[in-house]
Image (cartoon, rainbow, N blue to C red; front, side, top):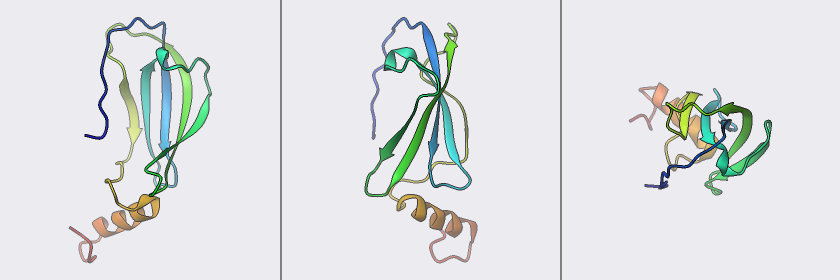
Length: 113
């Protein structure tokens, strides 16, 4: 397991709608997350970068798109939208991911499994 989160019941005033995009992927890989506002973001349209696995160059752009009211029937954090499959671990960064997709799309490719 790469990450472990501990869920606690907290009272929050607002929910942040965040879009996380994996840069240098085509088609774009992204997710929209709804998270409690107690993670220290207070304004909409905050944008920052996030690097995952420095050796492979996975760069993400994180944008707080909107601040929403809490839905008492929803558990948070919650992934509300997204497109395309995430790359497998240790595939060699964005460039290796492109090679991986080509190999998987071609049954005659030597790396097709």
